[in-house]
Amino acid sequence: MHVICDLCVVPLGVGVSVSAQVAACQEVIRESGLEHCMHAYGTNIEGPWDEVMAVVKRCHEVVHDMGAPRITTTLKLGTRTDREQHMDDKVTSVEALLRSR
Image 1 (cartoon, helix red, strand yellow):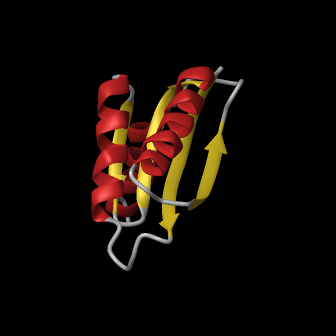
Image 2 (cartoon, rainbow, N blue to C red; image 1 turned 135 degrees about the vertical axis):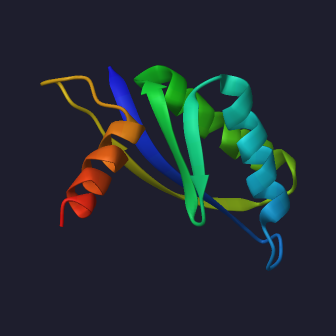
């Protein structure tokens, strides 16, 4: 099953700045080869369900290995069975509507 997810991993107990942990997660995501797009409060990732979930798990493992005693993660998931859709399709659709106004 193809899934588009929005992932936000928040390490707790590591101080105010979490950019090092975010960068580590970005490396995990990049190494997976999955389509992704980082934004200010997380990363969109798309691909086969099991591969995306493996990336989420690996991000937790890496951030714990960096010394974070706790992690809270927000995960939004979307799947479709009626047709194939990708992250860019969703954005392009809205942008087209905005241009027509």
